[in-house]
Image 1 (cartoon, rainbow, N blue to C red):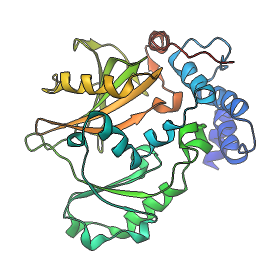
Image 2: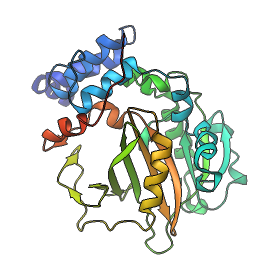
Image 3: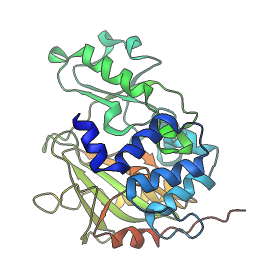
Length: 301
């Protein structure tokens, strides 16, 4: 009854729910136009896109390169990135399995991370900090849910359309001093790193702060994720991460390159073409257009 009441009060929620359930046969263009309206409350302009979100939707439809599928595959991207910047920046792999039930639990160390190779953000990630107190059955259930998710079907993120669905096991990463794992997300436009987002408390109370390349704090938030209580310091390896991000983003209209700094060492996180699937809620809203101005779209016939 409560869900019905919510749908009556917020009809766009109902529209989005119906689209998720019955929209699989719609063209990508029509699907994204509908989803954009239900999600953002306004029409999607694909003829003259101006904002960051509009341009990401345009890129979903018209910027298709074969290597994109490799670049978003959490397992295959490791070799791709290592060939460009070096193996020393890659988090060691513990194993790869086709199903959660196939995971070699006895071979895993006391701490480890499991993630779905086909994306899904935090919903497709399981972290084990202590194997003796780890709920294996819940982990299998969570991973099986993640295996059913499709970023292509739900958000029409084309690169994920044919990524194999597997489970990747990785070494658990944590800084010895801070006992944390800050995520440094470099927003690169036309191959140039321009903004660095710092995400802290990834698995508890998440905060985010954005900086330009001079480490000046930028006054906007995305998806209502609050600023940290104090401004995050510039990481020691910032210049290295910036240079590596530029190498990985060269030649692409927009690419977000994520890194971790662990015990003064840089590790590659992931490559993302569509931050928040192109549905970022900016505050102040004008930053949607400020970031959009930085993307130069390729020609399209």
